[in-house]
Length: 249
Ligand SMILES: Nc1ncnc2c1ncn2[C@@H]1O[C@H](COP(=O)(O)OP(=O)(O)OP(=O)(O)O)[C@@H](O)[C@H]1O
Ligand SMILES: [Mg+2]
Image (cartoon, rainbow, N blue to C red; front, side, top):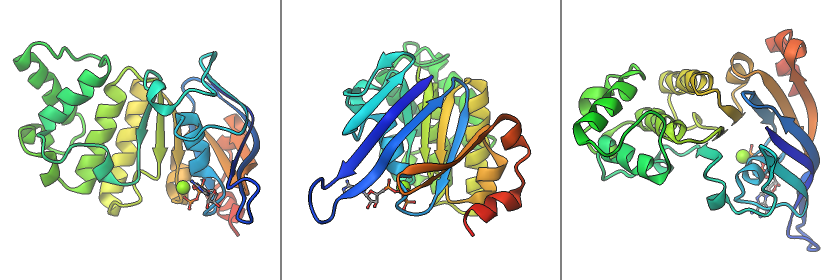
């Protein structure tokens, strides 16, 4: 569980260009919850995600993950809990290394779920099986450099690698924004399956209202650094796509 209590983030404090990016947000994200965040440009979504990841530290308030207070912990010390996928498919993997070596790197970084790095043939076969589960036909290309793949293929592999870590929390900031509709669809369905299979707690930022409607167990709308709407359970289940469009009218 992620517990966020009265968190504030102010940029350029005391200057003419001061921005209250996150303005006293309190939020409890339960284990296994798949939270979707929508909101206009500049409403504080990415800052919120950065606060959870630790790449931005709050000016006020506290954040804890599984009852551990991580408020002052920088992002590289939150690796045991958190994996991230960014908008840019290039930021998740090493282009000159093969798919297999990228998986090797990822599994060295933390203790990896269900993979034994030691024995080479065994590892290769396990990676092939995992990659085959994406249904993209990439299992025959695992010796090919990552850089030769399309953005969608790379993003799907990044996703797979990141959740195979021992992490519990998956943070997705517009992971499909740079992809064509078909690749975006594959990546979203992959994310959804992995979140269920590994019982991850996920936070997914999107401007795509169709994805916001189709995925997730809870939806939050942010505006001016605060939470405007927050629907889960039966309220989320009875939300109509048009209601969601109305939020932005
Ligand atoms: N490092 C920074 N320095 C100064 N201002 C910042 C910084 N990061 C974010 N901001 C400001 O904080 C506000 C919230 O930004 P944020 O990136 O969280 O918005 P967002 O909801 O993710 O927007 P978008 O939908 O465009 O990605 C914006 O006004 C932005 O200009
Ligand atoms: Mg953003």
